[in-house]
Length: 415
Image 1 (cartoon, one colour):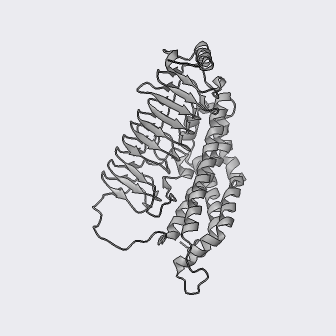
Image 2 (tube, one colour):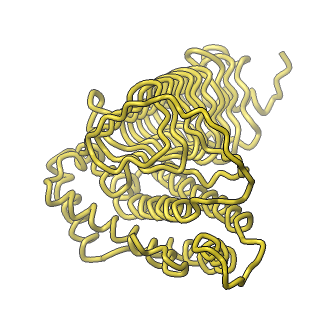
Image 3 (cartoon, rainbow, N blue to C red):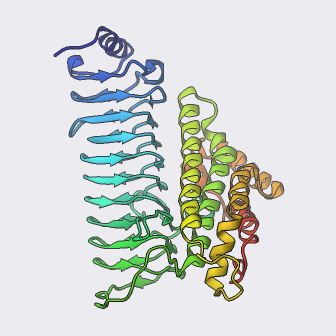
């Protein structure tokens, strides 16, 4: 095997700092990889692994390639992360997140603490909150999933599941909220169960406590907690179809703005709350910065996709007094999109109600000595009132962003 001396030197330096590499000749390290960002404590890299990217960081206890070759490219791995086999690009994995062999994790993903995926799972611009578990043979792109409280009581997606994220109009303004940010970050909500061999047609909103029977395709929002959805065969019929009509444009706009606002609030959570736990250690700080970067990229992706709808959905006869309500809304979306986009981008500066944020952060800081400083332990042991204060702070950010953006469009603030 032809190995570049620089690569071999880097592999040897990792071995010297304590990384377990049983076959140095079967590892490929890119010239751009900074070995100072790879911990020597308990890290194990199995034969056949490839590590690339100047931003890659691998924390203590991480395991790569135990069940098959792994390619890591510009990813940041927290402590104890296990990537058993597959391709992982431009994503972040927090403590003890794990994926089985055959995974394909593309840009913009965040798997938080203890999130798990079995074999052959595809993700892109996907955020999984702590403990969320995905089965095998799943395509779950462009969505955020929360719910559950621990390793046994967690949200789950059954095997052979698809989040349908591409429309006949050739857009991906389809991101779905399965749970939400303001309540989900408190790790105290009922889990969500999506039965296997099913699917969800984005964009959707799904409430906590939802149980969806196996084989069911979700096509409408589920807005009530703790309901069981039983699927039925789709009606077999043919109706005229024309691209770019966007008959449900109001719903598309509302759900996309809501998703963006949730991403903005989650970024603020990372900046103001997670940073309390991840700011002091060099590797933790790298993981934190990486996660914030992925959230900013997630927002850019959603802005790009809704911009595509704004361009495609504009009526052919602008300014016609006889336009329908839907056509008027499409026209307004097209004309005012630059203003909406500016509002979304500037919303990254929104910090929310400072009094509520400071009250919540104070409760977190107060409980750290009592609960040992672990992020999950501290958050889960907050009182109901303390959690409610944090939820109100984050929901206020979402409401603020949504109001500013939707106020520019006729009828969008009407329920």
